[in-house]
Length: 115
Length: 112
Image (cartoon, rainbow over all chains, first blue to last red):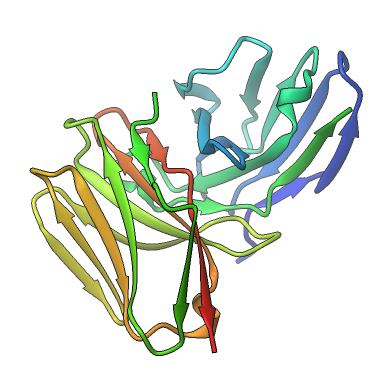
């Protein structure tokens, strides 16, 4: 069974631009969560989608948004990029919601650099 | 507000000895705790978990201890092996809220 895939793996953008990241979950998984990883903050939860609906949201500004398609693939968009948005963005998929949520399978991440 | 804290950014242990990674949390509503392991250029992988109704869970070389009164959990790895060198994240959740909260991570290095 193929794992979680994220594209692109690396991205360089300029401050003020916008970016879209993509995540394909494991086949059969309906829940997709997004996390931001930075050296000082660890992994911070962005949002979770289940069956095309946002189920949960972390404490990030409205510049961060996402969506999920009927095939469970998810995209994350960041508008008006700031230097502080430079991070590793991780996507995780799971079969369903809690209590099964803990069985999250992570993708390799997209390394975003904002210059 | 960092609800889950891993106060040691790094830890170095000799091969064959015990590695102890620590994690503290502040939210008393957390009722499920997990440890993830992350290698460079890979996403985190689930390692072991513990429910708040238990104080210990063991899986091979890995044991997680939970002290609810101190709001503290620890991961013991015995014996430590070079392949254990990675960044370890502890995470906590309130299963009703369905949201994982991660610590900042501890980089474990196992020296031969």
